[in-house]
Figure 1 (spheres, rainbow, N blue to C red):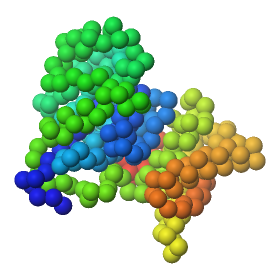
Figure 2: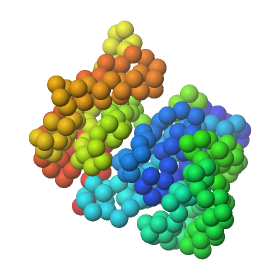
Figure 3: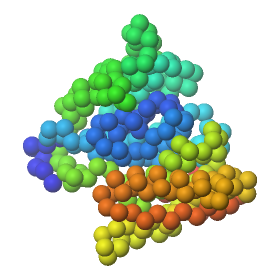
Length: 301
């Protein structure tokens, strides 16, 4: 731990509509993958904190689920999780997809942000693929809905503008001791990161809708004497037809999912990983309180 007079440390919460690029930006600022990403919306379900260092500052980056109009209990939990992640943050980054512009859900989000007391910065993401002539208009339109203290234009994917944003955050967070060791990149335990990496592959390798009906639970995480780790994870689906898709012909799909996830785990943990996946049909898992507990999520009525 560092002395309070020499260091800075603060919470930076990222809020935005689904697919605004929050997880990609967290990974870019941290400098290593700590949050799962996919081209599909609503990939993030649980709140996760990435830890980044910039000079004498430690930034605690809270990656939250995308804010959208909820329809299911799980949707409501994700949105609630997002707003709770922003509570009492030293800075809230409102991330806007500059290519998509201020869609209806983004305008609603900004209107809600306007009522919050935390310092707010506007971050226009994906500026590398956006219409450059529209950017200043987007800034003005967003500030009309919620006054922002600062505005940054970045591409989380290419890294453009990320260094400037990170430097500004480091100068803004309050003085205080670091809350995490210098070499720790996330608050997520290895058990949770393992299930998240499996879920990422489900999003990347399955069809458009199926990943939203799937959950991943770590049944067991073992530290082996040879320094490797063994992860036993259960993939929950709601119907037999979904299980058949996840498993694939002669187990080919679940094998591909496992191989890709294991490779990511090995890189993240820095040691060999043995991954064992089991697909189970559990109708109505999304409305089961015990399953939510196993997923590390708070139950909502």
